[in-house]
Amino acid sequence: MTEPAHRTGTIVSGDVKLFYRAFGAPGGTPLLILHGTNYFDSYDWIDVAGALASEREVVAFDHRGFGNSSRSPSKDYSLDAMLGDIVNVSTHFGWERPIVMGHSMSGRLSIFFAANFPNHLSLLIVVDSALGNGNPGGYHVSVGNAPKLFENVEAAMASLADRPNPPRFALDRSRAELALDKVEGGYSLKRDPDYRNTQSQEKNAPLPRLRNLDIWEEINKIRCPTTFIRGLKSDRYKPEHYERIARDRPDFVIETVNSRHDVAYEAPGELVSVVRRYLN
Image (tube, rainbow, N blue to C red; front, top):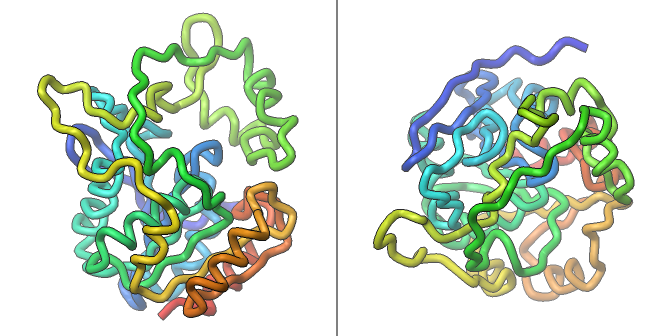
């Protein structure tokens, strides 16, 4: 199938260059898509982004340290840095208050963004995200991690294939090839092995402003319209979490799609249909 037409480029943000894919033309409120951790970069969102770009601009970018974006030389993968990247991407495209949609890890990231940058988005869409505490949001120092090496592409795919909710990477060889670098000794992921480190290693770098956040406290800070979309077959779904949202934030909308966790791969049409109900 032919990929939707889109433009690619890079944006300087702090100490990294962020790779982006831009779809569509100005019209309705623009949409910014944030990818998850094992669902690996903006490539996984090409079809969904293209479908949603019929009446607006849509941009998906690779997080710092992921995919075709550069790795932070200071190992700064703090919440401050990642949320700053979102602001910088929006500013690059001249957007003031886009719609922000985050999947998996970036579902939590987008919640923190909405809670702490309320003037930089108009609508929040959280796609199948586990609503626990941890990364991102926590404070974690871990540097010097060696990249995991795989003998071949098939071995890399097999490393995730036995999960209850395997990503497209584990099922689609052509996709896996794009997410891997050929290195001495085999293949490694296009992902900084220190991506969980949240403290800049620059000399005398201050502590991040945002650290050890409680996801539920942040959810209660959100003031923009918010939609949660969960996969009915996903292992990220915890009934008590969505019951708590319904109880604590009755103004939020909860939708479902018939999918496991990799919603953009397993149910792209259904996801697009649900998202379109809330676009303006």
